[in-house]
Amino acid sequence: MTTKEALQQIQADLLTMSVSVEEQIERIDRILHDSGPDGQSRTQAEEQPRLAGGA
Image 1 (cartoon, rainbow, N blue to C red):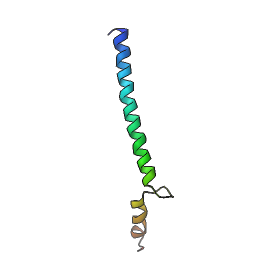
Image 2 (tube, rainbow, N blue to C red; image 1 turned 30 degrees about the horizontal axis):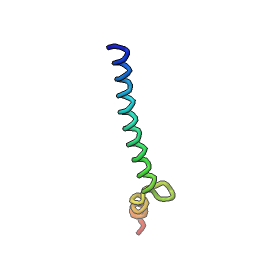
Image 3 (cartoon, helix red, strand yellow; image 1 turned 135 degrees about the horizontal axis):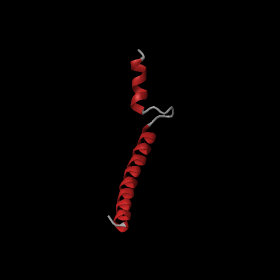
């Protein structure tokens, strides 16, 4: 593999990683957006009283 080919492969790998990182950031943003003020997801927060024997 030539230096140019190696650099092109590195560039392609970095672009792939960049897309993956962007997807993970979007996933984290959605989780944060959907979570309540205490950090639990709204669904988890609704389930907690039932699991603890409450309403």
